[in-house]
Length: 149
Length: 138
Image (cartoon, rainbow over all chains, first blue to last red; front, side, top):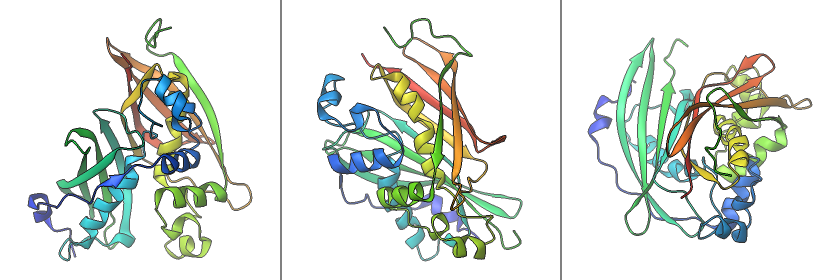
């Protein structure tokens, strides 16, 4: 089943708010070899002008996961997850994420292309804080391998 | 000293090697919530035709930026970061894998700089178009 081209016109509901916890930031930082003090020590983060420990740059992928599940859950999406490969990834920030942030992500499928029997699906998860201000957008391209590959 | 003082295009600002083991992959799976078994089960990796258990692409993206974060030393922050996943990193159960990252200044302007990353395993590049925008902290 090919990827449904109409996904780009679909509106997805915002995800439930994700509360960024200090220990989660530390756990994620350890997992990506992020040893800088501002990821672990609230005092070091405050000295640098942040309210609490700062999440490593790729942390939003934890929150984007919920939007990926929304996409895969669409019954007519035509995306076979066993054939999905992560093609590229980008994070564009308005400000860093710090512990205590409550982030809500809204998914939008921005492009669907076919290339050599594969499909490429690009989506954006725009994340806003409790005040509604933009914090970061996670942009992912997934490659869905065709039947022959 | 300000982040941008004396910064020149072509300058290597950081370089670091990351030894990965299967433990690293399990730790990342837990921290990120990505429990795709191709990242920890040899039988599943083989069944889908992979050369072995692979590091999560997002793990490689995650640590590849750390030399830049350490170099920044709170003088700036990563305001944009993108990569293309060009080649999977196979992590041997006994030998693991070593990914080497080199961070080079690609452009400098009034508010920050673009730092380009190369990430290699042996002679092979594993990330493409790996670009970090760093912005000075006011």
